[in-house]
Amino acid sequence: MPDTAAPPPDFLDKLCPRGDLPERIAALPRPLVFTNGVFDILHRGHVQYLAQARALGASLVMGLNSDASARLLGKGPDRPINGEADRATVLAALESISLVTLFDEQMPLALLEIVRPDLYVKGGDYDIETLAETALVRRWGGDARALPFLEGRSTTALIRRIRG
Ligand SMILES: Nc1ncnc2c1ncn2[C@@H]1O[C@H](COP(=O)(O)OP(=O)(O)OP(=O)(O)O)[C@@H](O)[C@H]1O
Ligand SMILES: O=P(O)(O)O[C@@H]1O[C@H]([C@H](O)CO)[C@@H](O)[C@H](O)[C@@H]1O
Image 1: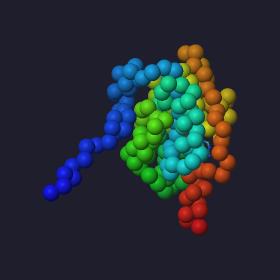
Image 2: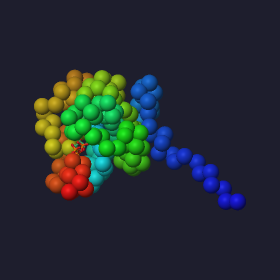
Image 3: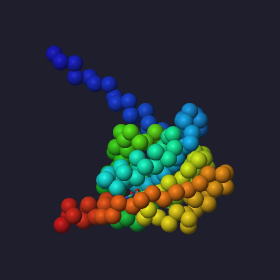
Image 4: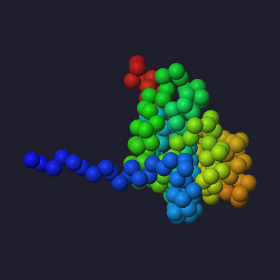
């Protein structure tokens, strides 16, 4: 009989409950970059921006909107398409990402207070200077930066094309 029991992949260790964050964050190399989002259906724009974000520091922490949080954002009644456990697992498998943690609020401000990153990053679809996240990280001497937006790539556009 072949041995079909495969061990769980190592990248699952990157999934981090809120309570474990202080210890896990302290163990990550600095500079520490933080970003957040829903990442419902992962696409080229996402993976490119995440690789660029990671290159700005020594580790990249992902604050992922929980399903309840994603529903607060008004992306549509059937969103997210992929549930939080699936979205978190796909992101954890990326080389660029060091740690994935969920947040339930509409904005990741309480999470940022725990992580206290050196750099906050979003894609170029945001005006980084106007974000509450930017103002918050600057309070402890961190900074914020927007990365280039890859035109024509979005989860919403993919869903529209699939649905015709
Ligand atoms: N095409 C893209 N190029 C670069 N960054 C992107 C692109 N699309 C999204 N991002 C970034 O990825 C993060 C997650 O974005 P989000 O989950 O809203 O993706 P999306 O494809 O725009 O989804 P939706 O269409 O559901 O809003 C955000 O920080 C956003 O700035
Ligand atoms: O995936 P999205 O819609 O880009 O992610 C959202 O980003 C918001 C942003 O940080 C401005 O506040 C955030 O508030 C929201 O919870 C989603 O993460």
